[in-house]
Length: 127
Picture: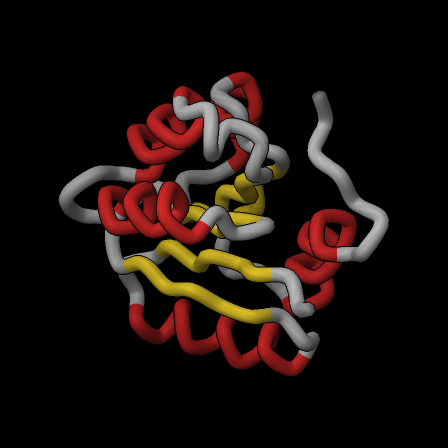
C-alpha cells in the first residue's frame, strides 16, 4: 500500500507540480487549498506525511501546524513546511513541530531528500 502525502498549498500550480512528481514516486496524494482544509483532511485521513505551505488563506500554515501538533490523532504525523518566507523562520517552525523546512523554489532532488525518510517502509513516528 503506498504512503499518503497531504499537499497543502494555496497555489494550484505548486500543488500540481508537487503532485505530479510525487505520483511518479508511487505516493498516494491528498490536496488542501488552505490551512483549515489541511487540518480537517489530516484529522480525517491521517496521511503519512504533510507538506504545508505557510502563507495560505482561511488558516495559515503556522496555525495549521499548531493545530495538528495539538491533536492526539495528528501530533505524530511529520510535517514538512515549504515556504517563501526564508531561512530566519526555520528555528521557529522546527520548535513548533515541523520535521523540516524547505524554501521555495524547491528543486525536485531537495524535495525528495526531505520526503524520502518519511515515506520509506521502515519509518515509524518517534515516541
